[in-house]
Length: 85
Image (tube, rainbow, N blue to C red):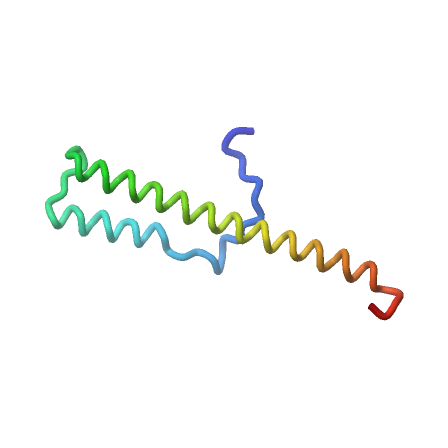
């Protein structure tokens, strides 16, 4: 399904306050006199959107890697349960 989240990305301790950092940049741009409808404002908005998506993707990948490693660890434990691995 489109937009469905299929990742194991953790949301607790990995929350890096990316939204707050982006809001800080937006506030600083507004204080500097950047207008959202002007060329530089549209550029800043697009760049922040790309950074936001990159951060989400990185967290999702980290979660997927953790899930894979956890599954491999469980599998290895199962194979070694009755022997001295």
